[in-house]
Image (tube, rainbow, N blue to C red; front, side, top):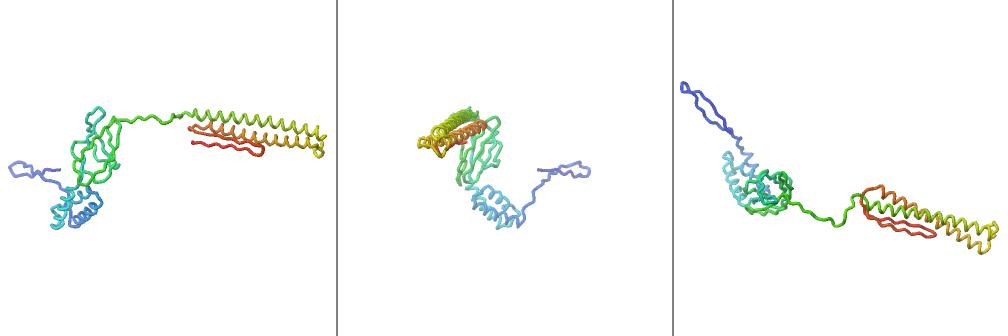
Length: 281
């Protein structure tokens, strides 16, 4: 950036004299610090940052020995600093110029010029974005000393893959299972009711016919009929419990929307009942 001074020359008019605004030159301590920092950055593979530091300590204001050391290191870094050239096209094969390139989440450029871009060695994740085109990303391993590596990138492509299993985002499968469970629950309640009535009838018959309305004076047949009535009552209770659980599970499935893959198993006996519900929610 420049400016102009306008000194008046007596009787001779005005003469324009250019002057320049310059950044302050680094002092001795800044030169030494830049040299030290460049060496640390070089060891960790951050060559671009190392080069920026070396560009400071080669200034004319730096002490001779420091300046010479930095100049030598700058030559070495320039010799191994890798670069890459991106060739970006759309699906029709046309060149795309206005491309934002991100490297490891940091903006590298927002326009391609065909010139190589300097990058640090190592694995980098590049993202390419252009207005109106689908973005894409590419992971590239850049090697130290690799110059002008060419990488071709196509924007706008979209991969379409068919789902491995039919989707049921509307919850229809889950509601179908809910109806099945609810129906099984209703059946369980009906069976429990029937068994309860049969148990009561069997007990009353045994008490009146075989026991003369005296439970302590029953005949062997009356005792056997009484035991049958107790077994029927237990089965009735089991059926009621299983029916209630199945009906409740059906209600839960019906009123929840996510896709579910469910298997249900029940065990019913005179002494116990079990309901097992397994699935993926």
